[in-house]
Amino acid sequence: MPDEENEGAETGTLEADTLAENTDVDAKDEPKELNLQVEVASPSACERHVTVTVSREDVDRYLDDAYGELMATASVPGFRAGRAPRKLVESRFKKEISEQIKGSLLMDSLGQVSEQQEFTAISEPDLNLDAVEVPEEGPMTFEFDIEVRPEFEMPKWRGLKLDRPVRDFADDDIDQQLEKMLTRYGQLTPYDGPASEGDYLTVNITTTHDGKQLVHDEERVLRIRPTLSFRDGKLEGFDKLVEGAKAAEKRSGQVELTQDAPTEELRGQKVDAEFEILEVKQLKLPELTEDFLKEMGDFESEDKLREAIKADLQRQLEYEQQQKIRGQITALLTEAASWELPPGLLQRQSARELERAVMELRRSGFSEAEIRARENQLQQNSASSTAQGLKEHFILERIAEDEDIEVEEGDFEKEIFLMAMQSGESPRRVRAQIEKRGLMDVLQNQILERKVLEAVQDKAKFNDQPYEPEPLDVEAIYLAAGGGDGAASIPDAAVAEPEESEEEEAS
Image (tube, rainbow, N blue to C red; front, side, top):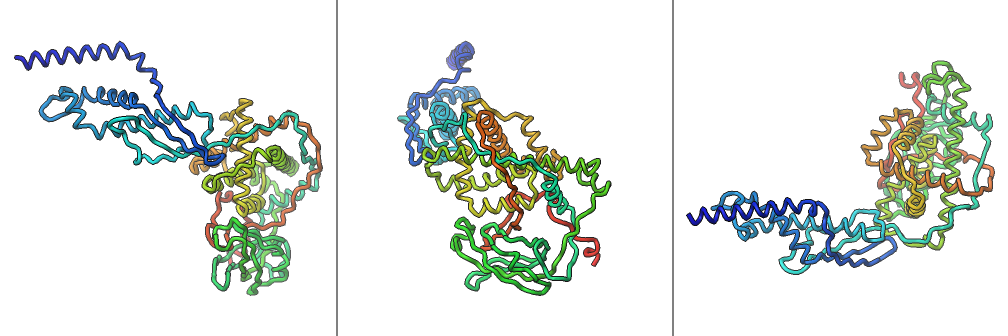
């Protein structure tokens, strides 16, 4: 009988507690702010070391809440579920509850620190979870490192006097661009004569250093241009090197590697490159027949095609204008932006910056050959180009915040449509590729930066200067002459190279 009375008394107490909890439910919906002590050290402009101390009162509160929820369902031998004394429950589930509230305290603490601190994080906190423990007595302390956007004085960007490249594209410009475009649809045919600039070579490439082979690449198709660009360096005078070459001949030159080459011990050095000529080919461009115009983009006439080409040229000019403006804005921060970026940040961001640059070139209508040449140039100077790109992004991001400039869904659709036009793929497929590669955030940054640059231009004064498109005198290949990572960072478009002729395929 006494046990029944005690059980009834306990049940009554639980009901009273439940009633009190229900009466207090609205107050619990509002999370109570943690009593934190936060110490922030600044090892560099872009790094913060944060030490967080959670008060004992908060630790006990989280423990009480966790055990309170567990009491109603806790199963302890010798007691019915939910009827075991709290001390036994605490003893039995101490480890599990400790891990549970550690996660909750960390999550809530990090959220509160993020809201209360003035720095803007650009990476996830580097936190060793295994090193964090919930103490039996006293406060809980943990620490982490985090990369942040550096603090700097904003330049006066309204009313800037900016140099702006301008050009009224004429028929000659359209003719040259049309020839570049037709190259993608042309056919390569074997040629028995000596090679000259503009011809194509099928070659085996072997690079060596001090007699040791570094790379051997077979049946690479190259167009003969003044410069041959590798991922990690250039061979200047490539056109002169192979001029007059015929099948079965070999030509040798030297590639000067950059300071950012993947193979560290070869950085800044020269490696020997041997080209075994397998075949010389010439390019036969297609005729602009009615069927071919439809194949290219369902153009009704050659005039419609030329109009589309002029629009592409205009997009490329806009790209050059924005690149020029980016550089001028960044130049205003010569002193304020002298902060050093952590090597780890540069290394992680180099690939992302390269992805962003290539997507920008794609939406601006550049050909795959031009994109490869520019991408290799960025790759060859990855440290400096990444640092420059990050500094520009920090500035443009600050302007976006000040001016409430945001990216909308319609902006993504427009961007993806323009990239699809360049690659010849459907917008749906292009978007799927971007999402699969985890590049939607890169695309968002690209759109945001362009919108900011447009806002800067709206309030700028311009000094117009004639724009001369750069001649395409670089043949770029996705190969590192010094070895290492020579793979492409972004796959080529669906149709990026001239096709082999049916006659050759048949042979």
